[in-house]
Image 1 (tube, each protein chain N blue to C red):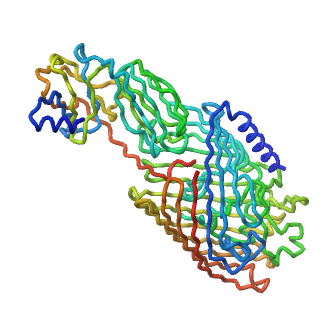
Image 2 (image 1 turned 180 degrees about the vertical axis):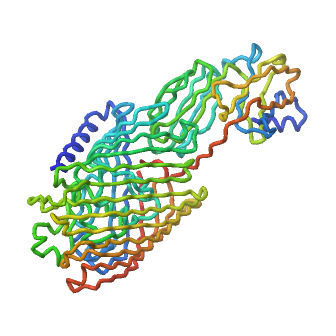
Image 3 (image 1 turned 90 degrees about the horizontal axis):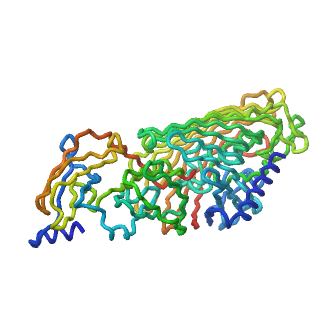
Length: 212
Length: 411
């Protein structure tokens, strides 16, 4: 998608995307930040609720690590590993548990309330994943350069609430927000976090972990 | 007797699993391992011989060196039933259970409680982390873990309280464990009358392991001792215990420390089974560091004491350690391990020398061909010195270099 858009931009077509670069409090680009727009002009698109969203488990990790879905979406939890995963959430917007085997998919989970859902596995307790349920039709995750392109239509210009969330926030339930005036659909913005991040915890697991 | 109870429990569990298979979920995994070995020039201890290598003159050059089946049945959100069955060809096509237990692990937001009840391995090893307590590094486990696999098993209940790093946004996983158990009374017999040796022959729950025709076992003082050990039999009716702690840093560095005490009363003998209770206590300290995504350093040391008889007629200190380096790349894993183990005879019984020393170097290379298939080769240099060999006219020191080629099929 991004590549296509980039190509379209190079070829002189209208980019139709709001580019947001997220930087941390030290000014360094921040990957893996969830960004979305809230407001009447950027509502959840009905068509997007028919899409299949998936939070898999592969090599005893959640894949993707973080998933953004619109409010009202349903998410599947396919297990690509040969071993059992016992996936759970205690998060307020949706608490649930699923015992998941490969080739035995469970019914998708329906997320009706916006908020952050922290996922764990009761068997492999280092596994950690996030589902962000957003009340928005315009959202994305920043890449390694801290950039995300949010596709907009010509009518989606006005004053939006820009929401920003990262897993290293001290309070995971409080995304940062800022009012943003969108004047045109190829606008470029830089957002610098207001609060410092917690230290990144870089766990190292491989196939020799977690057989017990 | 305790064994029979556990076999009944396991049988009941299997019956429960079979009869409720439709209603509840479960998973079944297994591994079949076919090996071609260079045979030792002696008959192995499992067949009552003097050989310290698992596959000796009594073995076929090609055999199914092990087949194991692991079953897990979900009984509820927190409870699961677990059974591990294995087949080994030595000495006489043995089929049995190595583990059968119920596990209780409720979902929790913060601190994690876990309990296991039944027959299972204490988690002292950072080497035996693959399916059915096998090693992902070498085919034959280090001497100290091979001994755990032969003579140490929990028949009781284990409780663990863990502070999982992720749930506290911490770098450290910390847990404390404790267990009470029965049925480990003869643990230590093999150290006295065979010594440490690296191998991959795990004992099943009702196992009986032969001894070589030792001079000491013909002596009147040991006339009541059978020519075998039934490692998991209960003799003195007392409970044993172990305490342990696991600490991990970002899953990169792991430490496991255990104190094991079977609380055996060495004066008690079961005349029927011809087994003494041994008073066996030891420390086990295991360390693993992931030096990079591909390279691991694994070390473990164990030291303790084991004694039997009213006046501790057999009284031995023992210690064992290994250091292993393992590197993986593109489906290959190469691992090298050096180890040394000693049994130090402390008692005054001159007719029963128990001192022994085992030095070994093991090198393994294996390749994962697919999700199911893995092939590999292993070379082991084994140097043993045993004071109980000269009394029957055998050389005290033996050296062997043995090759083994193994194919594993996982399902």
